[in-house]
Length: 75
Image (cartoon, rainbow, N blue to C red; front, side):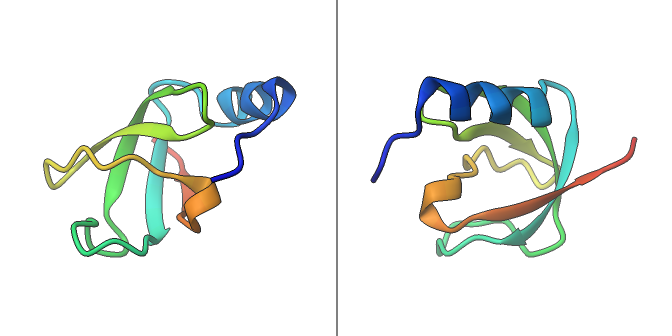
């Protein structure tokens, strides 16, 4: 895993602030929520991963360097 720079982490934190909603587009993990699941960002850690609370009860993080893809949703 390549760790992002501080600047990249700050950009992710601004783009995905705590409380924003995202929809899962892709996650290559057998434990991942189904595609289309809505989640709420709890925080962004120092590796640039989104700490999540998914609507199905999962807490699996979004790891952009791992190929995970989400899109922001309103409300």
